[in-house]
Length: 125
Image (cartoon, rainbow, N blue to C red; front, side):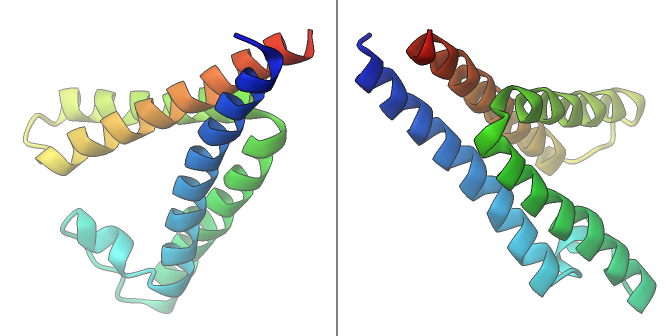
């Protein structure tokens, strides 16, 4: 694949990953109670909402930003998240279908970032 085409693929993969993590971050900052509600939980206190804003909001926005510069690192982090969720589903088999959806999404993000890193490396070498 020519370098120009590789960079186009890289840019699309990075845009997908960045948009995904940024969307999670924005939603978590704006509506922190939505995060636990997805999984049947609540965030009844200011402290719990603060924690959600920090981890699901601020951290995922930082992940989106870092992924533009270091896609391989974010690919590994995404794979780690998917692995943790998959292990949890094995330990607690009553886990609902949404967990499996998120494992798939996180694996997809990991693949997108790792492919972007690989294509970027080929385009610059």
